[in-house]
Image 1 (tube, rainbow, N blue to C red):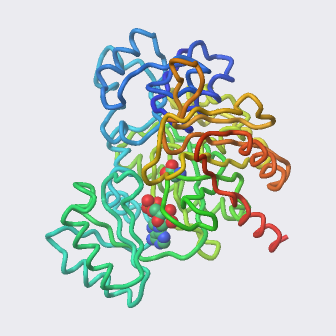
Image 2: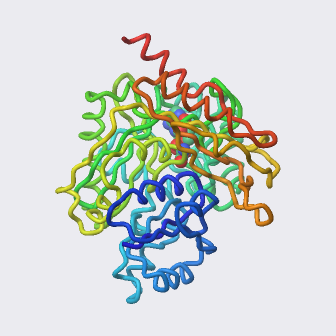
Length: 433
Ligand code: AMP
Ligand code: GLY
């Protein structure tokens, strides 16, 4: 099979890396890709919003399967575009049609879906300029903060505000509705604040059947001990010690099964990943959000723990035959540390030459914001999150030590990584063992 992976981050490099291990893979392409995907296959310089060019490339390179990394093309209807084009309809797509991608593209819709299908979640109220006063009354009804305000649409991970004072919440609500996050926040979802530990659960589905992939914990803030600005994610750990069998059974019964059943009832033929952002509130799972893709850096953490052939799994998804598929996972711990450009998630310099990549041992370095330097052939930085390094170990400590030994070898000007990835879970393990 010939496969095209859409995207250019660490998640997409991890997908390419894992698909390369499949016996049935013939050629692999990434669009637009990065220096890492260029080492494993062929990069095609195509913008992700140019569906026509993506379609033409699929015909030219005889692509059989397209794996969509990020959410934007899914929300904009890339799967629908392929389905409705007679030259492309035979090509399998991993990623839902736009009706399914709305679960991530509109938080108000996602909450409506959860309510309708009785999926446990925080209570909420959707507000626009038409019902602002009701929104303010809803905020007041909580009695105390923190208050959670979410832009309805895609806002590059920045659309969620958690504020402690009522007055600030009311002000922010007004600012959001008048366009603080552009069109994305003309509608705002106000949510009850849930207090607990977060975990990301990943599922792949053919629309009827599903397989649960390894769960992961993400580290979203830029600074150690979860301080500073939110980022796309600075590290990840899998498995997550508190997401044990008992908890995961509840997740399946209360969240995954009703979601798949809900999609069927809504008439949405969903083929792809579902990423459930969950809060563990006193051993009960609450769904915070749906994403319709894998997480980044969670993908770099969980894909190395999947032993099964990923391309075979994808073929079963496309054929609607996931039920007959076996999923095998590696029991070891995976720990991922992101190496970022100094200044990220604010402004940062690009074009830094990177050294040390050839001296890494017992880990995989997934490229994120990297490119090939034309004059030297070396690797240079092109983005905020430059690498995601993943190491496996029989204990969290072993995986952590290995990952950080290798992080120290990767060098470029102003390289930054969090130093505390996995420490909280190690403390948790000690406390409960
Ligand atoms: P979201 O984009 O919906 O995942 O929200 C971003 C982050 O905000 C989540 O990862 C949580 O840390 C936090 N968050 C979102 N909703 C809530 C909530 N209802 N209660 C507490 N924290 C929340
Ligand atoms: N790491 C979080 C995300 O990909 O949304």
